Image (tube, rainbow, N blue to C red):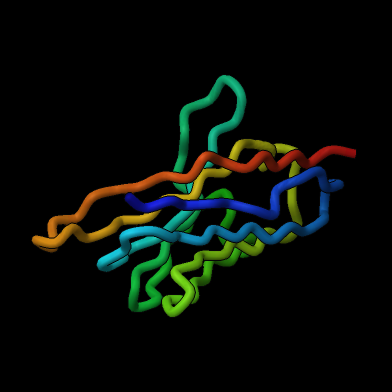
Length: 120
């Protein structure tokens, strides 16, 4: 059993910054990619950013140049630095990880989500 626990969400004014963290714990054999999705009220969940174990990153067009994803492989932790936040960034942010089972078959795990609200 693997748990992903997010932290760092909250209320911030437009133009402000927040840093989200997500720590994976439990029966971890291997972690491949880690990332963040978000879901705004009335909208579908969307990819925000992800990062491979080797450090290759991928971002949604809407956050490029404003958000930075990073990870600490030794701590099984992924971060999302969010700058120049906009009201449209308001959403529940979910951490996710692609893990490997004893046969190296990949499977996904998700956190419970953390609320980010951008409002004046």
